[in-house]
Image (cartoon, rainbow, N blue to C red):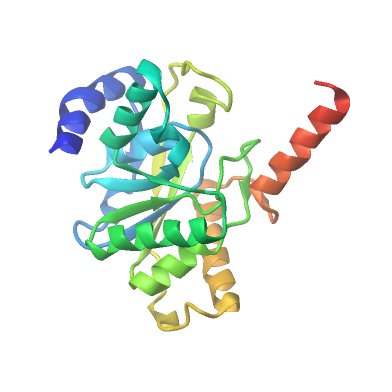
Length: 233
């Protein structure tokens, strides 16, 4: 009820009136049953606009840091993330990654939609980067389709580091669901997981025509950070 109230009564109408987002392919999102929405990740606001523009609730796995802030700002951030259907996860790796996987599987087990960014982090430069195989494992274990989603111009609206968004019209392009039932029971095979993940990334690349680089976005971010540190910036 809280999600519905915030989406349709409070947040949704205001955001739509200001930014006038557009969407193509809304009918490709299943009207019922579990599915994974696999999206490119250009900006913090990706997790806001996608849930607002489709007719079903979407749960995203978000950094737990967003839910632990103190003071008025921390409270507001926590309430906002809860209102937009996001779930706190620990991204530190190891057992935390397994816990994140289980959280996602719980969402899918309820027959709901789960939003995932296969790249694992926001693109540092607008390119599309190599996908992490966690999405493939979830899709195969939960026996659900994967719907490719491309966010358009959200990085122009709110690039990394900016606190107040530009008033820019953003868009969403949703492709046809990908069926991986042919790999049923093979979620323990790392080669299959890589193949499924790469197929998802190819679908995103074709749908959005972003420049693709076969390296992890986190690796590029680390390189950029070291470069800045080395130059004294």
